[in-house]
Image (cartoon, rainbow, N blue to C red; front, side):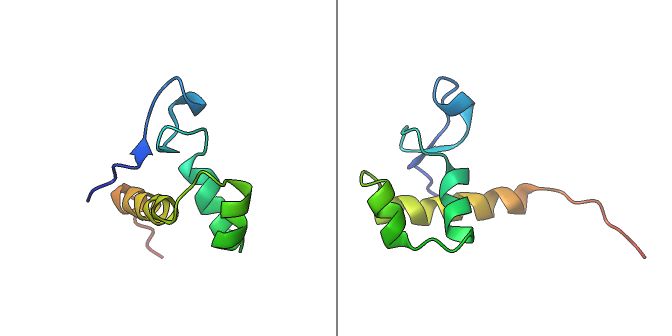
Length: 75
């Protein structure tokens, strides 16, 4: 998976995954989308973002969730 728009830099937002080295975290974007904010409203709030940035933030979040191991609860 090509995630070239997602960066990790300890000097930017404490090393959290960010969009293109900007001070906008993947968590911020995913949280906004999950809470029902429209892409148009996000672009107005962050005019330097591009549509591919939002797509890649979602792809990154989905990929990270796939990598988590959950304990099996039987019951």
